[in-house]
Image 1 (spheres, rainbow, N blue to C red):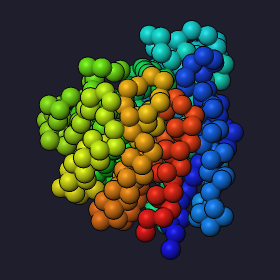
Image 2: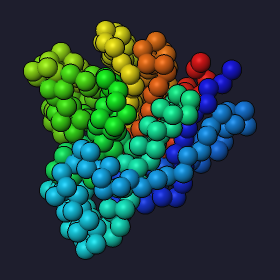
Image 3: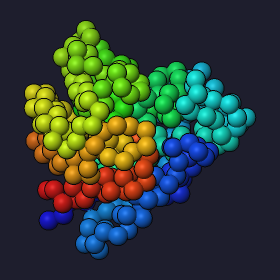
Amino acid sequence: MLTKVALVKGPELLKYSFPAPHPMNSRRIESFYKRIEMLSREVLDALEIVTPKAATTEEIALFHDPSYIEFVKKKSAEGRGYLDLGDTPSFPGIFEAACYVVGSTLELCRTILSRGIKRGFNPMGGLHHARRSSASGFCVFNDAAVAIVYLLKVAGLETVAYVDIDAHHGDGVCYEFYDDKRVVFADIHQDGRTLYPGTGFRHERGRGEGEGLKLNIPLPPGSGDEEFRAAMLEIKGFLMEHDLDFILFQCGADGVVGDPITNLSYTAASHRFAAEVLCDVANKKCGGRMLAMGGGGYNPENTAEAWTSVVKAFIEKP
């Protein structure tokens, strides 16, 4: 029996696209949508399409500082310059585009919590570098961090797990919740000594009440499916030690071999394996409730294959 999966799909998500030759562009999402349409009719019938929804300023402010939100609005209206030190350019409408990313992730949270659909996927989500008061690494608003606060503060959950397999360390989630015992964090990424943002080392395990609740697994350049599988099994053991109410899964595809800005060598089989492992953990720990976000990935063929592998695993796993 196939599992129903909520998928955010619509032209609004394509608006989060920086001008050429920036690697974060709409082709990443377009290629995924085209690949999804090639699945069998039986699998497609298991998808519930969710229309993208824009977050309100109040929702974004669950995590982000109001002064920073106003800064993004201003730069969006100007349509020029940068939102950070040089990675994240402004363009006309970037504020609205970023609102759709956050709002779509929140809409999936609500769908999973209230409608009995236990898995969802937002391909444009997972903008994990943005901090409370700044953009960073192509990320304007951190939809994953907003979702964490929403799930804890608004939905009233007690513990949220955040698992990140993007080639880049999810610093905007890790350090913003570093001392929070309600956030169990696990991240597989390319070693920070060789890749932006230069963070996420083994000894970084949390602080204060969050001590021991953060797991960072840096991998050396060139690591492939075998190394990834071992790291993912370590994460499974780590997650099983904790009570969880919800799992957020950032499944960046920039670790797949052939990505233009990273140096890992996974195949899409790693993404399917990660999704299957987390489905098992979610079924045992939190009633199956899990939301995946696309994250990075700058080779459109890789994003299409890796993210489709995640969606198929979500559908085919009980």
